[in-house]
Image 1: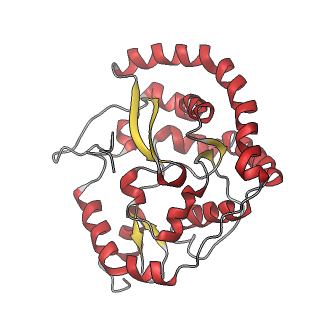
Image 2: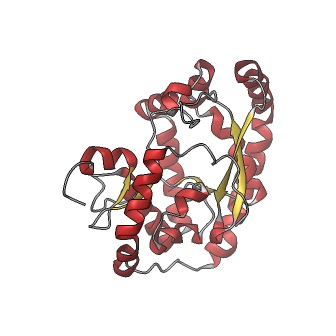
Length: 267
């Protein structure tokens, strides 16, 4: 695989150690016990979805162009150059693409040279962009370009996908999207929202349809105007990265590992 962009200093030493331990203990077991995925294949998934993406994203991208130009100037004066943060993400069928977004954080690092938590690096202007979802406007270009879709699983960094079981890697059976709103509840989501997210993504892959996408677009609009979610995004209080699976096959983040498993005999 090509060298990943923007991933080198994202992972802490602790996260690397936990991810390695969980991979060695449980990844093979998860692959053996996980149910196979059967992506839905239809005229809509082959052709219709892409046509609708273009019909919606192209005019939206043109309308957003003046806003993006203003944002570019503001970001320049806020954090300097480069104004874009670039990172290699995994797209449809496992193919990678370089995704850019306006920088909303500085590059302050810890003693090991790793980036500090997002909540400690988000700038004041960055909080405004995140709260209003302005930093997401540039992603419309990737929908037009064909790397992404309006609705679909969020594209993940390469190092995160390398930790996934074969079932969850099937998220890439469809184009990644701006968002894939939750429509199901699953076992283990009370431990970690990543489990819910990945299983919801797989459910979408197996049930993708025009009617479902229309429903999810309305849910996406509702999410965009949810005050609590906007405030969490503004402060950089998102999920920590996925690190692996527990003995029950539940996908967990580093935060969940530290909360439920670290120092305990439950792994």
